[in-house]
Image (tube, rainbow, N blue to C red; front, side):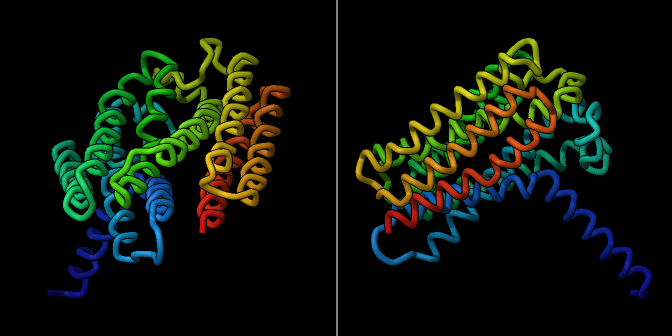
Length: 297
């Protein structure tokens, strides 16, 4: 094989791997991996089972990747209408639909299979519910009603619960609290994203802000209210005796910063304020989840 041919093959492989990573939204899937990993650690007693931790992360990554791939398959024609998504593999025809479906199927079977055979049926079932509801309920609902954000927050909040159930095989109060914290975190998170990209989402027909007026005081007020609820829920792990005072102070402090950013959005109703809230949300969740875990040790 000539050097030129080897370079062309290498370039093709690298480009194909980049397309697969983009199809499964690799960076976004890492958030799922982090949350499921924290849930797994929260359920452990004693020393960390590193093999189990790696397996829950791999299972979470594969299942989340399958969900994201199916999302892009369904939204291929709408992604063409938005600048931020127009260069994805499917809208540009760099990848065929059949190839994307096959790839997502392999990811789904592998991810759910790992959870089923390595951990337990409950974790696998929750993972399957997250995948199916995200791809086939939330994804099409985005074009019909703002309630889609609430629906999408359900599969988005399941990863820490899945990690916890994988460890304990229990659906209890602690699993529910991990779910609720991530559920209510997602509302201001997605509404901030919806505010920043409102014009493009509107062009594609997506309804992601909670008010029919779009960028409005009503949408911003609902964002503020969701953060207030989030703060109240975030102190429940302490109230139930799962964690201590240190984590409670940290999660309340993080919540107040999050609330200040949401109030700032209400006051300004600007894209800049929404962007600050969006970036703030990326910091809030890992800070809170890590605080809950380390205070449990």
